[in-house]
Length: 381
Ligand SMILES: NC(=O)c1ccc[n+]([C@@H]2O[C@H](COP(=O)([O-])OP(=O)(O)OC[C@H]3O[C@@H](n4cnc5c(N)ncnc54)[C@H](O)[C@@H]3O)[C@@H](O)[C@H]2O)c1
Image (cartoon, rainbow, N blue to C red; front, side):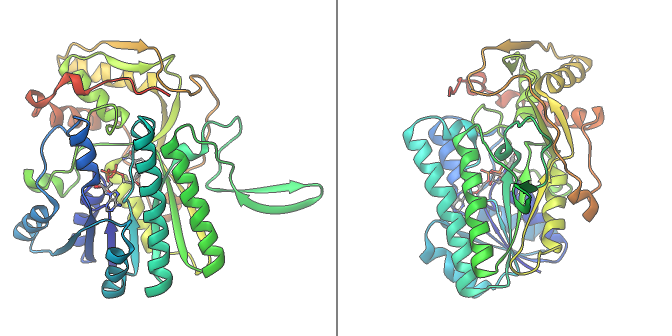
């Protein structure tokens, strides 16, 4: 397939591009380095430095013979984005190109403004570019499980049938996010659902949980092909951060009581889910929604696993409950459905000790790069 990957320089975008290219899809990546720029601005660069996207594409070609085309530019600029759709005529677009951090979106007014403008404008531009230039193109959009919040009922995969005063209808499952970033993901879904109903476009919305992991089959081919790996509170996801904290002797920062439960997913499974979604396009005028997680854990359970494996490897690991900087329930009911992607063929990589050990190995090699002041700054809301 001809696949356009927006946000192709990111943690998930780059490994997705390599996997798809190796499978002989025709891949083009687009990125404006927003993530790198914000990380530099806030002094939270990743654990290792990563060559720029154009260099990585050259390295990929040199090592594998496969070609990934790349464009550097902003998906919020319609005059940049629309011609790419017109010329490349993608059959699928993978939309990763958003500001992906909840704490960043809560930092200050400027950060909230950037998050709102970037996430909604990029999504709207994609819908318009498809409407105007390639109406059959399937949008695979990355959303987040955080849109659902922690309701006191089971979470369905995107939709719920409601009976009210003797009549029935199907609606988007209620969403009530607990950060401004997550709220922009709700707004994205609402916008896309509107365009699906109005223009008959095809969209799959993947409500993904926090991703963990360092390597995929392609990132290990050469150090220059590694993906970005953040360990700070703003851009790092919890399990990745905990492993770095354990290696550097920084107590694992459990917020409040640590009973916050979420669904998690290995980076290898993210790529497979995105591929499965892409290969199973909805019919025109349909919005498919999948919950993209493979198992659920509380923060305490994650901390315990990391501490146990870390201690077995000889690290001095302490777990510390600190005052929760966020407004969120620390103990709650949580039972999401996540069967759709497995029905399409996902075979999950679960969080075993082997997986954790390989993450430790990946981080230990770069121990000298860890800067403890980057780990926690306590963004409050
Ligand atoms: N990593 C996770 O745990 C996780 C969990 C749930 C959902 N997601 C979602 O998945 C997507 C990818 O996440 P990620 O972790 O790879 O984040 P990332 O920041 O590493 O990747 C996003 C990429 O998009 C680029 N980008 C952002 N705005 C852009 C724009 N206007 N034009 C061009 N490029 C732009 C960034 O520079 C970055 O390289 C995001 O939408 C995120 O919200 C991620």
